[in-house]
Length: 207
Image (cartoon, rainbow, N blue to C red; front, side, top):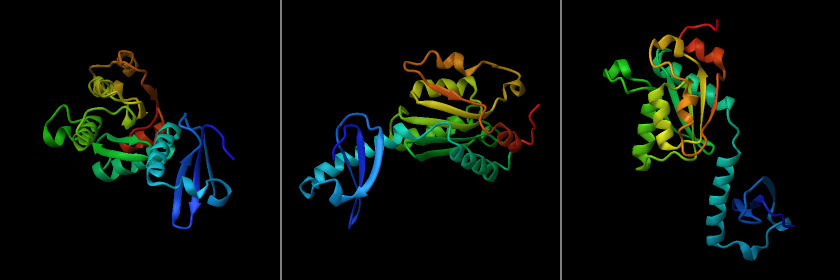
């Protein structure tokens, strides 16, 4: 049975394999025994390499944001790494966290070492390019104008932040949406998200 736009996870004796009924945008995922769906003559190496790529695209396009599980993991990470005194950031690609960082401004006396900046630097060096087109930026605090500008330059897909700390900065109180409007392609932004939990990291309470 074939349907366009369906990704099939096929259970073979040697493990789980993936196939797609078309090269169009995948909108559905199904799991089934191989004898009910895919003929054995379609099990070529080239076929499965292509299908794994399709499956990765499916994950990238279908993970829902904002994602509570990711944000709660970020909160735990930030508390453990900084004792609650810094901002934490994750960069998420598909269903994986590909970069983690906290702000190190005070530690290194570097005004650019915000959590978002550190996380972006780390992943860009690892992948040897500065593009984050399929990535989401998760931060425990709303990104400052500097960090938002970097996100625009890197062409990330979206931002999820915990709490809005602009009133504590005393300077550069610019809404990130103003900067995001200058992006080549729309960059989504969600927040505050799990605001109370993110405020607790710094020992604050919602007013």
